Image (cartoon, rainbow, N blue to C red; front, side, top):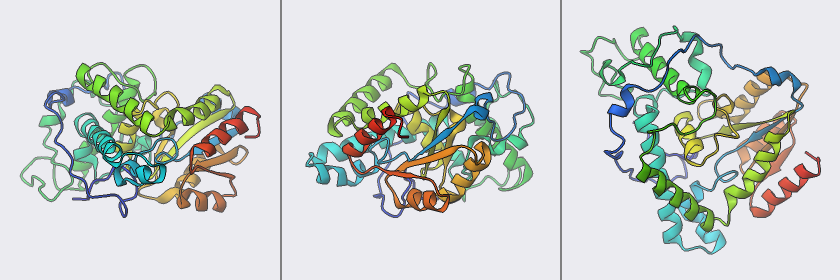
Length: 328
């Protein structure tokens, strides 16, 4: 099995033990994940407003919008003179929640080695089956690991029947926000227990204090862009797609990143992700890349896109000021 890291950089992420998902979020919650009235869908849908777009903002996630990986490594504590025990502990607690939600509600145990770039990548294999009463826990799927149940009726790993069960899981993940009547990655009743919600809120508050309101500062720019009818926010992360969706859920970013505007570059790299997005929105719009890493900077240069580097709070503040003054 691949070593799990909810940040995208497996080469530098620490090897961290992950707590087993809480009994409060038990297997029963996975049996009837919403998928009612789901018809077949086209891949990479673009809204009717896409034709009116003038500017597309391509955002990195970790260390740009949220502080996560540097919490786990302790580098944030070292850089800003914070208590390393508190910083690393907060990072570990958030990592545990991310994988708990990913495993319990988003099938990450099953999909970890069946990663996708975009939620609609399996749309062409959608047979339109209503999954609202589908019982995933008894369909014989045994994941992508080496312990595959060769005696099951679903066939060998990678076979047609096996892949159809993978598709069902991805479609169910896609249907999670749609069951709320929209495509926002938001919490549905029962996704977290009241106790877990309270714990999450406390943890997010603690992290905001430790990071001097980093997320709140980034959100000012995200919300300003969202308020413009001719602009859109797109998320491109090197986190695998399922944990990325869990991060969007837990950090409350669903209002600015609908599920169809979230891409994972884990499989294909950021440059190829940029190509997909240009193919989706066209070459007439202006693209602005916002991030902290070399990958997005190089990809931006390859596509002749302006790049706004985020390395500290001042960069986030300057970004917001530039947006307010319509420089971006």
